[in-house]
Image 1: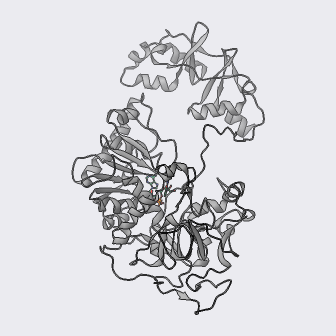
Image 2 (image 1 turned 90 degrees about the vertical axis):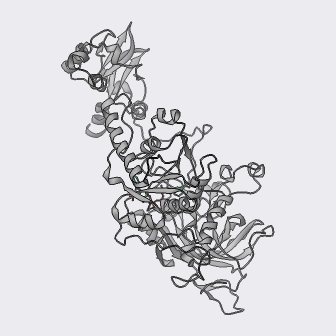
Image 3 (image 1 turned 45 degrees about the vertical axis):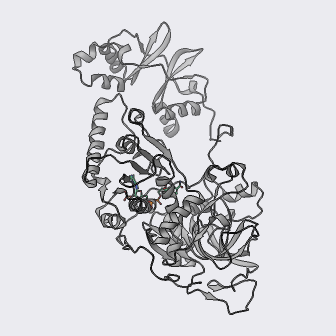
Length: 594
Ligand code: NAP
């Protein structure tokens, strides 16, 4: 029942056991060994994590205490150790929990040692894996049948909650426990749940667009943690997937997992935010790039069809491509923005072709168990790339922090005494175990923590920034160089060049009604001869309205206006009359050179 782990000699009941010395089944010692993060040592993982002995936590009526055999490694606990962007310990203390430390770990395999009086789904002695979606069953919205993922009580175990899996015992809600695949080692079974359950909800959780037989799926980062699970989930559903990767060395890996083939994203360069929709030339170049990418998708898929589902997580650099490529009525489903959060979308393709851009986060218990059925049957390889010893918990997080960790999922031994213990027999379905090239280099930007409290509309707590009180009037250029709406573009261009300025304000009856910028000029020339462009009027090409700031406004607020609108200058007003211009060049001079 307990693999090759070493039980303490029968009857040897103690208050604390050495690592690897398994207490008699059902005996919970008063204390346990654990890796702890404390606020006084927040910082890089090698500093933040330290071994300590703490009291074994009590369990509530609907909770279970699991003896941890192995734990999975996720980026969340790099953030927990840094203490940013959230100090998880302070957040819990504020909510009434007394412990001044954090025990992380959001994936694990182990054996149930104690269960609360209301627990019915597991018993002492059961071998389990745990999903990290913790919520309160008494939450009214859940009782009313709502998805627990929408409950305000939802938390990520081992990040937002204490007593995760980097300890001899972990405390979980009973609903988090699922049967452990017996054909896997302790470390394999500890490694897949977080990414696989996330991928399952993305692919199966969105009614009307759930993956089905015959679907075509585009999967970003096919060799990554989520992507490798998505390929296998698509295959199990009878869908055909095309994986995006960087580097031909990952093709074989993705195809062994079940992808039809791969696209090497390094062959394309149309990434990032969309060009402005008025920029015909830029847009045409982008279209050429995205169409070539689409043609490659057809080539790899073997037919000229768009993907029914696009499995997204890179975010800012790839969303424009994902939304463009997605089939009419299809879904782009996104669970992260690893490359950035300001994704741009050409809404024409979204509404005319009635596509869905769907956010998705982890998974509920039903979905986690559905995913786990695949693992139990042998249809889901855990894609474990490296297992570390218990003493190496800080090291594997440090590797993640430095982006030197291997691709795939990592695990660490906790109660298991040797690598490779705990596997018995063959699963129902036997698949080939894919192996990543050993020299593979991890290039993914650091992800944001999986779960962070986002400010709502009712939270008005301002972000404190250093502000020296400089006003717009301290830095602005007085006087506005303007033109009339009916001036020709040729005249406006001359004004601009003669005065060596980047934009001219269009004034009508003393009011600023628009701006002609250099960008507007260049766009007006697209598809026209110089004579034709010069003959246009300022009102034909101006950007209507005028981004203004008041002379008395704080410079920091004016800067936020400019960065928010991706602008480099604002017209300064006083009593609603334009009196000058504030440019980003002046701000840079002030901030860096003065
Ligand atoms: P991962 O193992 O590091 O894989 C990410 C993959 O993205 C890499 O394999 C890389 O593949 C690809 N990639 C990197 N830069 C890219 C770019 N500029 N454009 C396109 N692809 C790029 O990470 P993961 O475990 O799959 O997680 C991915 C993200 O999801 C992370 O931000 C993570 O925090 C988040 N996540 C969210 C949830 C949730 O519930 N919300 C759960 C799990 C994970 P190639 O270089 O081969 O293309």
